[in-house]
Image (cartoon, rainbow, N blue to C red; front, side, top):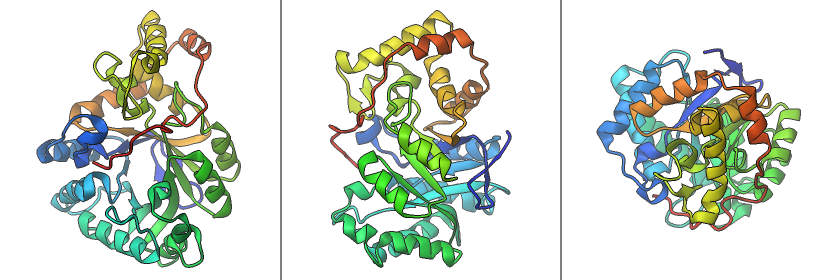
Length: 320
């Protein structure tokens, strides 16, 4: 799989990246549990495949995602050669504290869990859920700590990973980030990140587009998974999904393949982060990424309406 430069950091990544939040066992978010054995088998399948890019976070599953990935890394004697691991600094989940000291503690927790002495790509994560944004953005705050970690060689590249565009875009403009992660905001259903992506691309910031399946529904189907962006969905909320499904059915294409290709074919996007929770999903993702989809399908999909407001504005956030 051809690799792309991640900004000017020296890192080379594949256009696909596997996301591992579900591997931390987060049933409140995804509606299903993931055992340790299943998680480890999934990480093994990722490491054995052609994708060289994996994304996790300190607080996915309250640390379980990193711990399970770290166990596989230790069994293998380290990360596979040329593999890029991305993780994130996170707030204290009990107090919401996210000052510089908490950022340092989060990094140490990640290094211990993963069994690494440095992180290839390190993001600051979810500041919108912290107790006080000024602890993050102010002088000697968590963002200053993040960039200091890069200067100290503890991270090769640094990024910003979060949801709310109204908070994210001003922070992005204010700091020299190497990368960003946005989730659920650039999909077949929603384009709320479009202007931010234009800006980031113009500044040479690597765009990592996460959750192209809108939380999984475009991959698993509206009948099997009636949830959109991690929220239970009624018929009105599922109607845009069903229109995508109908268009794909007319052309004999899996909706998941179309949803993935929508992100992969965008020249602004360096890599697309696809969450997986079992080895079979790794293989399916690779098959979908290789699919040759007809232009007539894209013409049909282009005729469908898409949302531009925040898709998680009414989400009841649960970290588990």
